Length: 273
Image (cartoon, rainbow, N blue to C red):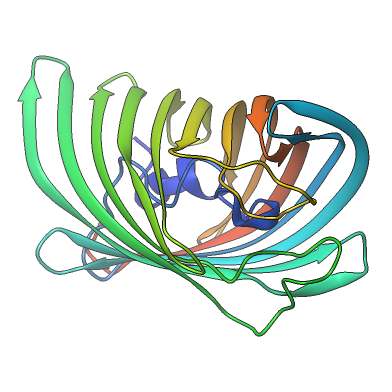
């Protein structure tokens, strides 16, 4: 099995424009042992030609370039610390550090049934702005939102390396206004010593939505998107990641596609796995 880098099913959760979501969420179904740390630098190119104002589509083009730093660290007590810091440039005009995520997840139960290992994980994240970026420009990089993100995760790992993950939870935004959304994320993939890949589907819905009157107005979004992730280890703890995805449905959102790539460094505590 892929060792400390099994968390890579979430590596490319580099920030999506407007803080509408983080691709596949900030949490996955893998746990890092205490003392092990993964550091990731990634780049995402995202573009769309259609923006949905509520259910009304308009031809509007925007391109977002995102550089992200990501960290996953194993703590004692079957806990992991998660941190993401994204820097966004929208159309190479509006740019800045957007909204960070700081989170903790904990393994609550682990069972072995035949060739399958079943893990139940609880997680909670806090998203908050990292800079004083403007929200009043024509195409803001975010809404300076502060949100609370509880998650429940179940993952099934087979001895062959195949796995399936199901995740559900809520996004509770209380700044700049109160919004509540629900999310469902699923993944299926394969993790081995020389390769990792997954296919993912992400559904999100904000309750009591309004209708955006401008791009990124923040009146609450819904979407269905899907994509893939790839990872290959190199030498001395380094590895490469790649992936992509596409929005197939949405409200108050740009129907974007994205491609991404990055480099990973995995620090493995001596004697760890």
